[in-house]
Length: 203
Image 1 (cartoon, rainbow, N blue to C red):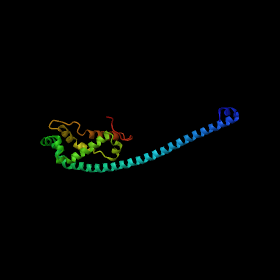
Image 2: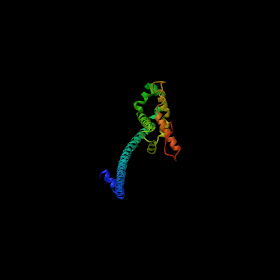
Image 3: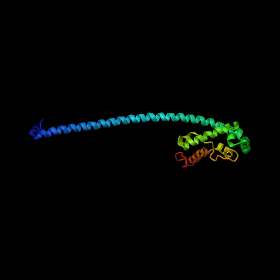
């Protein structure tokens, strides 16, 4: 259609043609919006499904870690009980002398008689570090791991003696067991605030 034909086209017809193309453009635009929404919704549903599956996988993996933690903690508590009953009465009162004979607190710590003590110390020191560094959530630890208050109180003088001479006589390691102390503060705070979610003090 030439420019002259367009001029000669009746006004009503021009309006009708213009209206037709406007409607067509509007329909195409509406369809593109609907298609875009459908694609977005489909992608969202797929993302939610993937997230649910990922969350379920993470929770199952967490359950496996919890089961492993419980098994390990049970073994450690048995070793703590054995050390407290069998060897602590002999070692505790003579800790200073035994450290001097061994050469250092570390040497006594690594001795055969202290194997159970060392295993228990490492377990709770490691657990405290994982909580402090937020590799594991404290509420989970609080719910599944009973803190051995009586044992820790019983071995505290021995631990302090080891720390005092850890690197040699008179050469201390002041932060020996610092993560155990942190973990205990978390338990103490959470026990004192039973209506709150278990939590640790701000450092």
